[in-house]
Image (cartoon, rainbow, N blue to C red):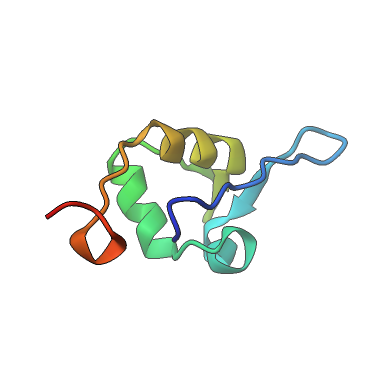
Length: 78
């Protein structure tokens, strides 16, 4: 995921901003395995039965709180 990408945290009229973990790639452009890694690092998941949900606003806040480290291939200093 491009570090400049902003995830829109738009909610529907009921304030619902959750998406299924299984639909992560289509919904926010992030692989489900990446979100599982983020979950181990503190991103909350929400479960309803066997279905796992992620909040767009939680994901946005989680990504914004992480420091950005550019690699040499991305133009950062080596």
